[in-house]
Length: 369
Image (cartoon, rainbow, N blue to C red; front, side, top):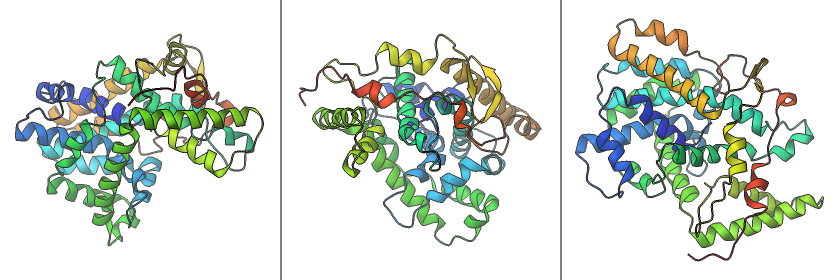
């Protein structure tokens, strides 16, 4: 799954031809305390919650009861049904529930288009295949790097931890939450029989907010201290030492952080960005649909996803037969691939050790707050 900033940017671009986003985009570029009209603020809240919602339950690791199983279900099967249910309940006009539902749709479209490339360059950990242990955390780091790349590419570098308190300080209007719960119950039998579903929903929002604060809001001192520890872990791994539980925790924590520019030092050098974006269009394959050799860059994949998103949204807003277009373009299978096979074949992956590339030669760790 691409991470939170990529999903927010993609949702904004998906709705840009249909909604006056100028006040929203202005707000994203200015001080997080800049004023917004009540509707524009609520629209930005609804848009961001929709863009993040399929992943929010993944972050529900602390508060109980947890809704983790809901994100797992949405990413494996049923996303198209849940989204169609949301859109059917919405008005067809760009009110808050519709903005939420269309942003929710954009999440699945971006996942399906970018996941094949992420899988190819990060691999997939399979417990029965010991060689894949070395690929642990690479998928998550690759997604954080894509966030970093998109903020630079789209000239939205001001997206940072200061934004998210503003987006989560205001709750969703009750109508949106109610419709989402109803749609989940309509598609998943476990949700239908879950008497704590509303509570899981609230817990997921709160835990996700905490995760976004932590993963994007470390001070320079905290970030660089973790980078030093990461370098020590990488050194031990290079020398053949088995990682301790503490070292494994360090690698897990650092994989969740967004790369930071500290004291003018840019951790994502040109080599990393070139490999990440496939700007030279090297051949690759979708490990979930390996018969097709591909050469698209990350920007190509983004553009393909955006074209699909615009097509479906335009049909929804302007065509009473929108469901025909929807069914042609949005299938109900796994979100790991735009095709419906789903299973990831590791023999076709060519993972890059993104953690080592980021932190092994970090040039200066004697940094100020």
